[in-house]
Length: 238
Image 1 (cartoon, rainbow, N blue to C red):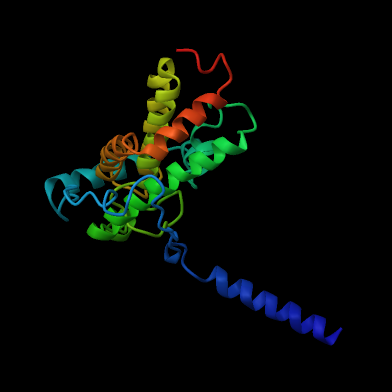
Image 2 (cartoon, rainbow, N blue to C red):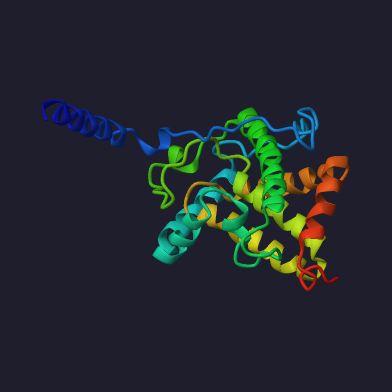
C-alpha cells in the first residue's frame, strides 16, 4: 500500500509538470524522407523568402489574422482542429475515391507522399525561420493551440494540395473539388491563428513544385499506377 501511494504521488507530480509546459514548446519531429526525391531535389534553393518583418505585406498578414480572430466561430475552430495532423483521412476521408477503409497499400503510398512533402517543407521552414504569428503579435490567440515549429511555408497547405493534385490525376473529373478542399484546409490554418496568409500561399506554391518533381520520379509513377489500380471502377472513370 505504501509503495502504491508513492507511485500515485509520483504520477500526479509528473502530470502536473507536463501540464505546466507551454503548448508552443512542443515541436513536430520531422524524419528525413527521400523515397521519391533526393535531399537535393527537395531543397528548392530558389524558393522565395517570406515578407520581411514589418513590411506592408507582413502588416497585411496580421490584419487578416486579426479579422479572422474576430469573426471565426467555434465551428470554424472545430473544423480546423479536425485536420490538425495533416493526414490524408483528415483532409479527404469523406470524399476519398478509394474504398473505405482505405486499402493498406494505398495508405503506405500516401504516407510516402506525405513524408517526402513534409521533409521539403521542413527544410524551407528551417531556412527562413519565420515565427508563428502569435509569437510576434501578442494580441493573437490561436484556437488551434500554440503550435510549435516555424510558420513559413505552411505544411498543411503543401501536404493537402499535393494530395489534391494526386487525386486529381487519379480522378480528373473531380479535380476542382479536390483542390477546393485543399484550399479549405490551408485557410483553416489562418482562421485558427497559426499561419500567416502568405505562409499558406507559399505552401501551395511549394506543393506545385514538389508534385511536378514527383511526376518525374520512377518510383512515384509506379505508385501512382498502383493507386489507380486500387480505385473502384466507378471512382476511376475519366
